[in-house]
Length: 59
Image (tube, rainbow, N blue to C red):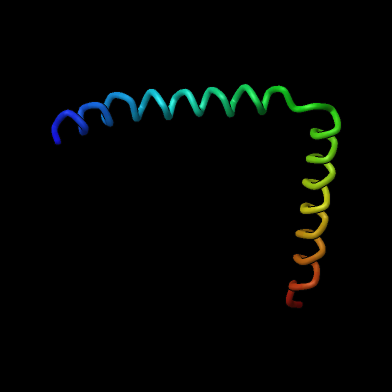
């Protein structure tokens, strides 16, 4: 039981770091279309939030 725990303690953080590096590298390779689509979505969310805020203002 102790040897399994030791392997998990050593390999767990290494595996987590490897996954984090992989995800970071994939996100850096985003194409122009993906970035444009992301920006368009963020703009829409901001507009929706502004509209919702204008409708919920009590005078």
